[in-house]
Image 1 (cartoon, one colour):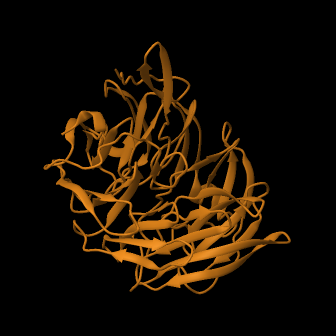
Image 2: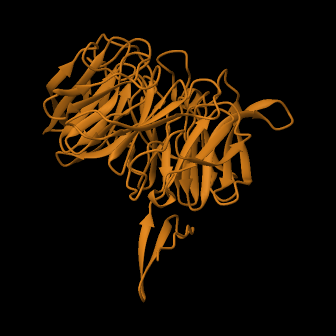
Image 3: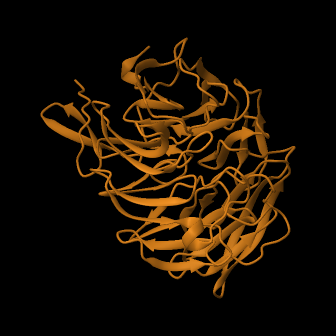
Length: 432
């Protein structure tokens, strides 16, 4: 007999499975920030539906009132957090929002800044008792996770000379690493900054030098990751001028790669494995695998392979690395499913897209979730040998482009459509 119970305990959930006279506790990891615990779009969950029934998995509930926006959700400590532009009685503004995961009741809302034409993009980053958000005008807030009270705040343009490469405003989800919160103002003297996470005091500022002629100056639309590469802990980010690495200890510039930049919007989050960094952008740009090696106080960059836009470019749905293979949607405003060999760049398959336009991608339990801008969500097997669709459905709520990334947590698939969050049961035990 199996019993599945969700409990909040020190910011983790647990699945309690009864096996005879003993209890085996299997932790269900929180999803505390954009693209999950490791910022890679990989869910560690198992025992999920291997195929979807006709019409898709069962809809458990809908939560309305999130407001306008493309922010996806973070789940931590029994709370669900996101952002949205909404009117709370004194005109529309941009808010960070926190709901109880079990009862879906609003626990708090905190005003972040002015509203934007189509809402925020940032997903809150939860770090225990503190949560961090960035509004579209560059307002970085540190909030108490339990209450939403503001501990400290900064404005990236005013305090760091921050600027964006193009018109869509700040979109980054902050990175918490140890005692620091790190983000990308994009300014000439403070391209990347690290702050004390509890006080907001500046630890260091990194002024990224000229990388090349491609792209535009300023921050881009990617969220950075932290990695240990050839013994050097560093923050890997994509800017308006291309990909960079910044040393975690003192903020020194380590390396840059300009070839991946375009002048419109550099968006997907990089992927790191060992000494390799994969980067991709769209707008007729492409994708590349880089090999990094330590060279004194900097890093040497070797291009292992490069694909032009006719081979593979990801617009804004992201790419996941599963084993030795990359999976993602190909094309500007396109989501053509593609599988590539990580180390060689060989395209193992490229298939007709089940849905229309771009696709946000998530991996869990042997399968990929491709969520298309059109509101169609497909389950695709993560198999480099062949392309297989294992179910698809048209989402019951469609409100603007379905750009928010999908999330799977505790056997539930979460899909946001602007003001509405939909929750589907994807546990294998649930059947059809």
